Each structure stands twice: as C-alpha cells, then as structure tokens.
Image (cartoon, rainbow, N blue to C red; front, side, top):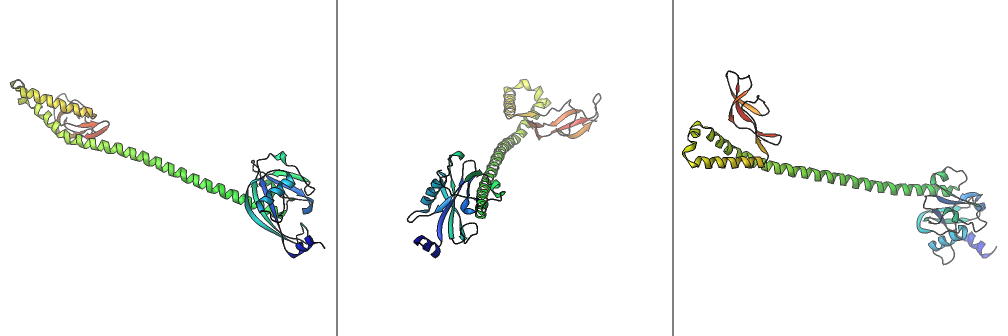
Length: 293
C-alpha cells in the first residue's frame, strides 16, 4: 500500500466539478467509464497548494479542452463508498456552475476518462436514465436558481411597469385637474361679471332710454362700454343663449311665465326676462323667459 492509498483510507478526498453552461443554455455532459459508463460532469481532484478556481480551470482544460468563466458555487456532494464510483473511496466534491463562450464543437476529450460528450438542455438531461444521480440533483438546483432569478427579474419589471403606468395616469389626472381648475376660475370670473352685463342690457331695453338716445353723448358712451363687456365675454368663449322666437328648451331656458299671444305657437319664447349664457357646450346660466301659451 503506497502513501496515496494510505491517505485515501485516512481522510476524504476533495474534488471539484463543473456544470458547464454555454450561451445557448445547454449543459456539457461526458460519458465516463469510471462512473459505470454514466453521463457526468467534468471535474477532478484539487492538487496540493491549488485554489478551487484554479483546480476547476485546470481540470476542465485537461478533460474537455475548453475555457470557463464566472465560477459560482452550486452545491457540495459527498460520495461514501458509492456503488457508482470506487467502493473504497470517500469523496467530497465542490460543484460549481460555470459559463463558457466556446462553441460546442470546441470540446476535445483529452483523456480516456471520457468516451463521449453531449450538449443538452436541462430538461433533456432530466429525462435521461443514463445520468449520474448527483448530476440530476445539480441540474434541478440549476433550474431552481435560474427560475428564481428570472421570476425575481420579472417581478421587478412588472413592479416598475405598474409604477410607470400609475405615474402616467397621475400625470394625466393632474393635467385634467389643472385644466378644470383653470376653467372653474375663469367661470367664476365670468359668472360674477354676467349680472353687470345683464343690467346694461335691461337699461338699454328701457323704452325711455330708447326715446332719449339722442339727448346726450353719455348714452353713446355707455353703449360702447356695454359693447366692451360683450367683447370680453366672447373672448372667454361665452355666448348668449338665443331666446325670443326660439322654441322653449328646458336645458337652456327657464319659464318665468306664460302669455296668450295671437300668432304664436305654444312654447315659443315671446320675451326675455334675464339673459342666459353658455361657455362652449356648458350652460353657465339658463335664460329666464316668457313663453306663449
């Protein structure tokens, strides 16, 4: 019994293994006579004074001839007198997930420890019956890890999309409110302004004023002021609701009374008591009118 055999019998042997994933998401498996001719992952022992990462890179290069990157610890496996391997061995294997940019045909089996290699998707591996059970456990762990990362990413993305949609809806609502507030402010000013304009109209509809229009320049001046009032209303898109001669419309008019007048159809407006006004399509003051009976 040599020194190496003595060490094997005295303590576990520490090895490394690599679940190698390429850019297409496929995993590299090799068929190994040492493992009952089953499909396993590349790997091997850690030499004295060698780091785990260095051992990974060396073993992969020696066995399959490709370069790896981004080593990430995946799980630890223990083989104690395994029937799949040497029954007199106790092995602790530190399994890592690694990536490669090398093409699939770059694999070159360097030793007699592997007779075949395959690049397979995770689900394809799980469906096979010639894969070493420890490798199956690693593939399950890899799928869980990958799925969790994707799910978390999707969750963050969906949260961001919801927040963005809420922000856009809030912006739209604020803009609509601003327009509404501006219109309400304008409406308040107009409503305060309307009674004054109405009184001007009533004053100039007075028959006595009509007869005395030529008795003083003040009448002309007041008429001009009234016209200015009217221009301001038009500038704010305010228009008077038509009354006399129109058919009564409860949306626009309020009946202040009825009169029997020859030649007038029932419901026809015969006199305006107070003017009515619209701002666009919005009625801000209905017209009070007298209608034919």
